[in-house]
Image (tube, rainbow, N blue to C red):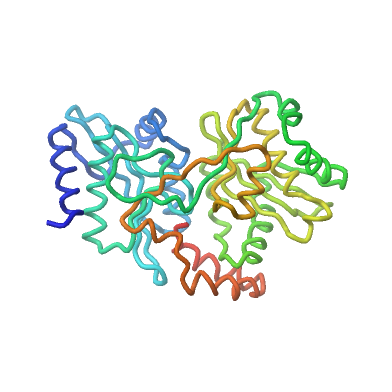
Length: 357
């Protein structure tokens, strides 16, 4: 018996001993969400609505698993997305394109859910199985420290006090776009301008862009939780962000800026500060800058605000291969950033739908 089979057998035996049964979730979304919100490690990306987003936008199948106790009550849940791509093969990920996911619930339920997911991945000959968690998980898969996030405490309902607490250099950088006449707009009508900036920035970075349908679907599915905002020079959007709110926290899930305006207008500083200000007005107490690679420029940008590093607990049999750079990762961006923007925007979503990162 292989180590993986032994792990699966132990988890299955333990689940049976605890009176747990694991299978596809067949209840109502409200039951799923109510359970999720009570668990350690819960994030917005555990909400059932993300299944609808993934299926509607990418045609990726939601494989949402539930562990129930002897009384039929939920003891654990695992939101999984089955991805199929001609370029990248089959993947099971919780959750692709996002920073968090993974099984939540009791330790026994998490082990049982992970066992069933591993068995399913084996049967389907899935290339990768990956969990993205906010907290350490009681699973036997290796974890990766390839990515981190940066978080910062806010001052609920006291944005001016927060501004005064920022490092002086940062305060000066925020004042620069204000003096340059950069303005900020929030609302559902900012989804399209957001995508205009996002797609251009992704091309310039050498990365295929998501389809605009993803952000339209997020805005429609989570109208009270998804905040879209853009910084403008005149009528031109030059920096943009999408923040996702849950509990007392907002995460900048996506943020972009046009490089040619950075030195003259610093719109990215205006955009981030405006999101912080909005979060304070909403009574939130944590600003999550989103994932980054330790030591790189994006990491330095985020820590300058006074934030702290937090580990991203990503698990899977092959998760330690995430940081390895192959020929495609090395040379692909060099080619991609020279594509005309219309072509990059046309073929980018087809490529991007198969990349879980």
